[in-house]
Length: 93
Picture 1 (cartoon, rainbow, N blue to C red):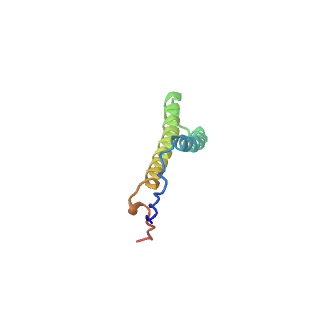
Picture 2 (picture 1 turned 60 degrees about the horizontal axis):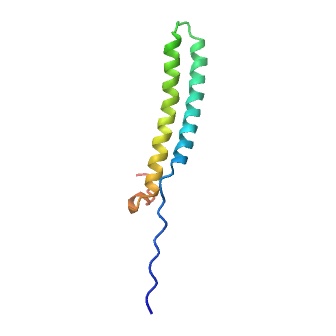
Picture 3 (picture 1 turned 45 degrees about the horizontal axis):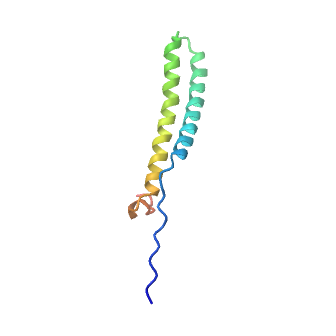
């Protein structure tokens, strides 16, 4: 009788929908930070141009989306990696 073939674990693929969802969450956090910064800047005596404020808020929102994109992409790539080093739990050194 032949030995049973070893079954390979299903290979996890990269899911772009999860990355887009993470980017949406990151952008939402960026909007919250931008709203908090807006409230702080309203109460300063400095005269700030509206175009610079809008650019600053856009940078905050896009930074949140970019950070979430990077975190979720790397997380998915690590989960799908066949190397054992990515799946070993390490304690604090």
